Image 1 (spheres, helix red, strand yellow):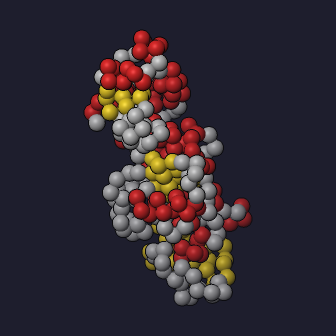
Image 2: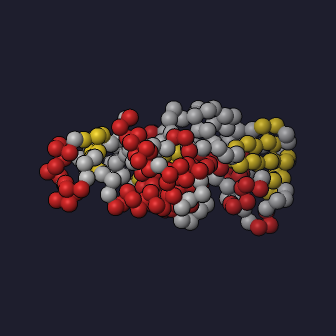
Image 3: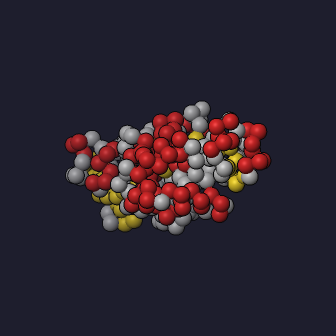
Length: 264
């Protein structure tokens, strides 16, 4: 049996040069699901938005029984993971992420922007797949093979090399601009921060911090205290250099954005 496959241009990233922009033949010596067929060509199922075999829409489990033409399209951003689709009829109840070791800096940036993001350099690929399935999290990674695991239903193979470019890529792909809540999560525990009176955290502060700062927030899990210090200012400047409109607004009025933490 022979399958004639054509991938849409947005999936060229995963294909060999000779496969891009054309229909090519794949000889099948065994029965295989459509998921197995497309992943054998390098495209993880998490990147696919639509599949048609002989003009009939098919899901990942479908097994072709005869020669035919398979058309595979990528997911069109913004990808709303909260809405059901043909390939993913069970949407996520809320937006949550898990980042692997290859995009650890991206994971930390997602935390700084207020997104629920599990990230640890100790996570193995099987552990990430288990976390994704159990906690219903979107996997962020630069490991294409990881996204081929059956347990992972939602994920993104990050294309960009640099952390801040990865951040913008993620925000655009998942349509997250309106969901950003700057500096509302602990960068260590991924817990929502809580406002604290200065007197309550005074014993945890260095002398200069006690003298020059008056507004504090604390993680209820690890008890780490946060304030608008030099690290905060550095991130503000970096985000302000990015082209995405949300960062331009952040640069114009960072204090207003930071105050959102009190709305928790």
